[in-house]
Image (tube, rainbow, N blue to C red):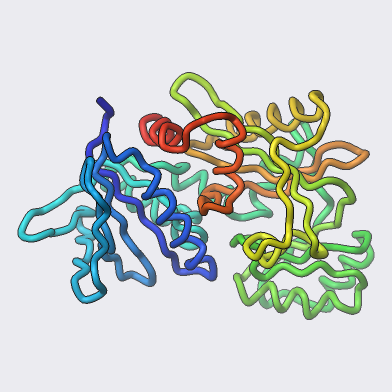
Length: 338
């Protein structure tokens, strides 16, 4: 018997990733063990939170039509179903971007003292911002970080572009410091293209990171806690048909994900141990994925994914399968140990 009875899976978001978030949430809800938990699916976007489907223990999923979706009572995070008030014991957060990865949703749940699957509000806020997160790891004792430059909206763009041209080697990657699924990211080959790329990144947020490109193999690894220790899943190598691992490559089949990655045992141990160290260093909980570039100079950190994708095509489910784990049992481990 587990600690919880009713699980709310919350998905959708206020960011460009909301559709991916829905796919991740629906997949996760469908794989949570229906023998152990009642599962409720909540769609949340721009302040409107509503119950869109539910599945009672050992029963089929019931999808609610748009006009019959009860709204969530945010005063205590409950819902009224046919005159019965349902309070959720645990929240599985599948909101990519704002507010599920920024710490805002977690702060709300912390105030209500409702347990949830992801990192704390503080850790989410740190990890979601690529520049802040790199600053936590930049001393090099755990992993290398690529040289970079940072700009805030309304800073002097011309002066910043001159600084980048003097400081960094091209090509560079221009990316919003917050966000995921490669929204707002551009690979820039020469200085003349930099200003437009920075402006484009600003469409996703008010701070932008320009990062020197590192030649090497793109690899990713996930970690989670099982109640006794931090565990890692098999490493995946990403080989993209596109110029880099952009939205099209991620979600439209223009990449290959090799799992487990065809790397040496030493390289695999390096990446898995580094992932566990970063997980502990940041104070993570739940499932967290770290992305890297393995070059001739060593292992370079790219970013942390606090709420990694959980669609049928996503990386973490592939890692779970490669590890020989049952996805429902894996999710139960996450739920019972977050």
